[in-house]
Length: 370
Image 1 (tube, rainbow, N blue to C red):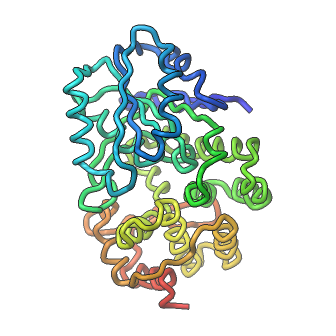
Image 2 (spheres, rainbow, N blue to C red):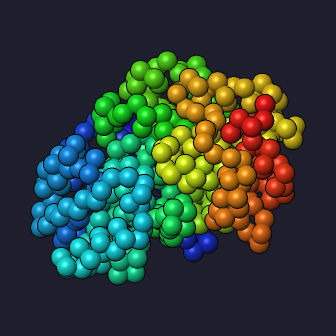
Image 3 (spheres, rainbow, N blue to C red):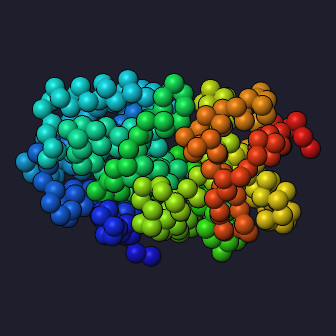
């Protein structure tokens, strides 16, 4: 399998191109930066959180030290979704100002989805935009959030309400970091993996079913296939619709209910776990509308359980979830943009989901309805 995938778009005034590379360690990071056209940073700030920093920050800075004439800085924030907010971004920008970063310099996001989203957003607004690159260390970040250029932070616990589109210049994936990823983080990443298959590729979904044991064993070859497949799926969607004006909405399958659950449970569940629950709700509604057979719905339930992903949530009411979902950024002109399945591997955008349908789906997820 090739170790590079290029994400690019050069039409309709929107142009970008960047490589996703797969390696077994951080040793080639400096070489990959040197290979980027037009990049010669005098300073790089590696942004990480308090969980990932102790594990990988020294290795990354050692690898980057091979860049001549580049000063290295590091900035660490407290780990957790609750710190993905404007206060943290403000603190990072103050650090950049105090250390005289200019528009030729770069940020590096070392960590999971929270770090990537926050760092990318800071890069998008500092001096009206500076370059950054992603070094994703979680499965969720490698299969989803590090690719595509969506950046942002939460606002008063509403997910990603403040953000910008800002494409990275490089996504550098070290496959070895997944070997020691905590079980709940691995499961969270599989929530986004399953979503990718459900919205775009029945073939990929079947492959996951067949290779579930090897995925759970974290077989390097199978994980490489899974991650690359997810990046190819998302990359194709992003190339077609980089600024979320049409097709890209299908990537939000499971997110409408999932984001509401994530907020309402106080972020006690990880993002990918909430996406998995939300995907079950969206699949149930697709089944109720006759868009997928009951057998497909049960296959989705089965894979969630195989990968230790929840299919329901406790401690919340359906009414509470629906009320929060109605405040989501996916509401347009008073109508909720909901993603359903018109067959496994074929997600569609629906703007006619009623409050009654949404409430019924939420009741399935809270156990209020059989």
